[in-house]
Length: 423
Image 1 (cartoon, rainbow, N blue to C red):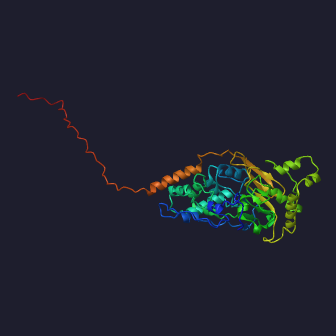
Image 2 (image 1 turned 90 degrees about the horizontal axis):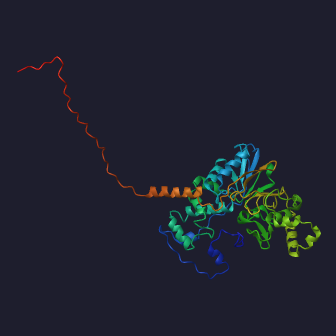
Image 3 (image 1 turned 180 degrees about the vertical axis):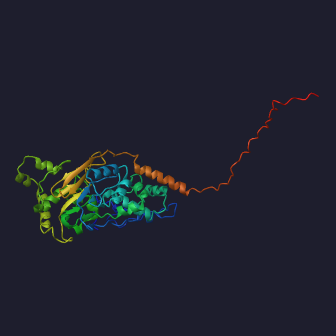
């Protein structure tokens, strides 16, 4: 896999970053946890990469509607309300989630369980990916480790990934999620292509690189990209242009790149184009490097064809999430559905056919610690502690039976006709 900039590549550990290009670095001293597991084994662990593309097919009759839902982030109550708002009918509709089902919100386990129960399709988001990596680590080299063991590894910098922390919430979710739900979440791919009449659409979490075919996309980029900068894709919003703007410039004739957003925050480029300026003058002031970059992207995309095989397709209409900072972004060829649900915004659904939008308001859960996930975690630890506690053998004590009360002897009075004899 191509080495990505440090700001984007989160599937590395600290030694990978510090020792990059330096062959003289010495391995760190290994420690041993209470259960005998070497910290070297823990730190060298690498979870499998997610599947890049899942080519979905309809079994039997095609669904009447495809319902795409933005980043849920553990907001199970709002997820249920949105399904009611769109009048979801299982068997007639197909729900497709654009990633980040978990983390930040109050009930991540409830969201995953609900999604599995309605047989929703989904792509893996960056927060889903961290939970999956945590779960695979806990089922692998960290199996049997106590929380104090993991804390010792964290303090020593021996956890396998730089984004692993016990207090972040992802560990709590991964350690308490039922295996059936975890397996469901772990099988999400980075991209989804759709069958039949919807074949022009692609589903991603973060976005895509406009200069690469679908088969050449990088899963890490697809899950985390926000902008395309001079050094390539970046998860930072201050590096270059929004990826969907570069995408619209590159795709050109296949869609109208000048459409504006229906709602949400406008990007810097949209603000610039909204000003009353001469288009040709603005193009001259753009700079030779930027014009050359855009022209190169357009030349690389000119051979694209909607009917090309998967290995040759470079551009399609994209439905994505991830970018809460820009909020809802609805353009002709890209649909950004992260409408800041967990931050007190809305949870949004995009429905095909018809390109209809539906949404429900959400509470602001940002920064709240007393979440249902943490309560489940505490209850789980309490149950496990009780199950591991040795039980004392109790002596059987027979119930004490009280004797029946003693009744006083009752003397019947003499009959009235009885006369005492005189002596």
